[in-house]
Length: 624
Image 1 (cartoon, rainbow, N blue to C red):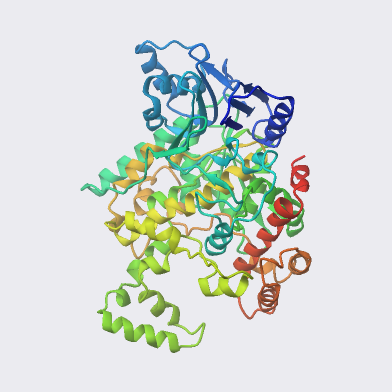
Image 2: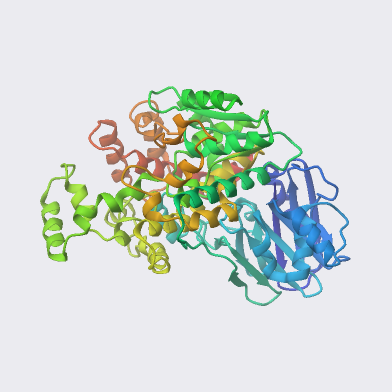
């Protein structure tokens, strides 16, 4: 697990002394991604910088790595779990290797198969490959976007990095991208390929690019998720899921350093921990919680760990600790992400790093296997959504006349609203009308439908549940779940692995009968039944909690003064009507409305703006 920066110049130029200093500064910023080693490569076109976190102690693990007598140079962030198998196949085809690293296997596979090589990589990755003979830089990112990849097309060439902040030493100014802010207020994160910084984009998952000097950037897609149910019995489905997940977990256990697992009280993390124990009986599990009742699964996690027979470590988080560490969380996140779940993830990663260097986690299970309760909504709304159009019109009008908060109003409104208009993924914050009241510049409003409409068109043939899963795969998973998972663990130089997002596990999930898997009474039924006998029965149908965060209570009590001061003192009057934000805070504090998620989104943005726009030097100090 590592981090890189790299850029290709449009004109052939010798490496200047100032460029060496700049590259060193760009690479130093991501020291946390790789504290064990550092490396550089520079020629008349290319500048690569690399930081390494050593997980598998193999010869030749240092990067940038050269292949084929210096023709190729590669920097690679991630892990390839089938590299041993690929290495054997490549040797049979005549390839020779100087190391035993997965990095060299990628270079050899690329040499043999060019861009089609990326399809064969089973794992998580973002990478750059410089083909010196062809004069072409290639970049690629894994199928689900587990590892990050930022790029910036500057006047003098193309800049790339594992983290956005690494680009700032080369970028003179950093200003808020209008689209990014609008989308952030809709989704609570900036959906890909956009970022909050003007000019900087993300390479989307399942994509690669080609870039020659003085030629335009060419981006291609090599893989996209699709749901393709096949006729099969429940037993066949369960067997396929169990087999695929067991193999994936076993592959993800490859390491020469201790491996642990995050553990809450649910089936996803319990399944990962139980299957990991088959490989390493001494595995440790980790959880965190809050003192407030209803916001901790520490007891449930401890009970599950005891039933699994694994060592368990837990710790409590206080509001004071959150405020103290929040600047570091914002700095590591690169872009504002208003998901409060980032908080416990940051602290559980900090605790885990005291014991292990690698952890397994359950990200992706809900998107693949239909685990979110909102996926049950299409069935719940059938009584209304199944009515003729004229009847729906009457109900819609009746709902509009009911006072806000009255029982039945929301049900009728959602039942008479098409899925494409009501579901934008698992997070939904400000509506377009609410954004207009909040933002100072409303000349150009960017609607969430600019993001969601193309995705719904791609999913036109899917059932409503599959459409929701597909939407979350292409927005929520890559824009929120995997961002906070990568950044909050790498903040502590901890490698996080996500076996549910293995290609073979997705293939098994994509073939499930959606109606049988998500029912009125339960979600991800096939996964739960597939894990019967592997995880304790008491866990199989536990309601989903994860690591809940008491933001609603904190903003009324412990964090109210901090929030009020942050809003009043922030230099964002040119972006927001502060009177509207303060109104929401006041009504929330008095218990009139629950504005916690919206307020948290604004507060996170204000802090991000302070560290990355208003006072750019300070974030670089936070990492020290």
